[in-house]
Image (tube, rainbow, N blue to C red):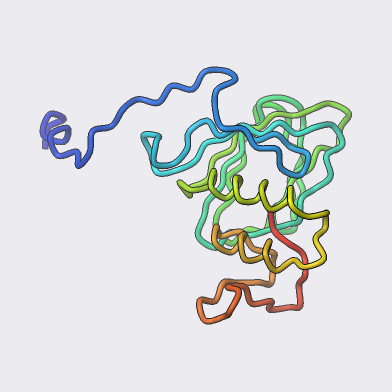
Length: 185
């Protein structure tokens, strides 16, 4: 098949996406600033690309796992520590990490310098998760007394605390396997 034939078989016309510095949908989540640069459905590929600005001495989010989603991180500036399953690595500017489904992971900034990372998720709806998460976090104190709404939201977007999994049969969509009560973010 020629390139011309492939072009003719495109189901919908695609437009280029150009996102200049400062452009993108911005979210403040857990002390980080996340800017969606290529939201799924609007970009030329079925994924979400984001920039995360991580302040100095940023504490780790709860370790979490995706069962379907792949996540990628490219450190643009600063240094971040990542735990991937049982291994902790220091990722300096220029480092790239790929987190396959099933890998328990978290990151934090152990330094006195802010860090910036370019991240991507294979889910095209990651921006919707961030919007819902930032709304939920704005309406409750942290940590919330009832983690169920956070667990429910996280499960809808393939974000789980290790030891929990999604079960369509359960009322809230989350089944704690090992009595975990932490929330994934």
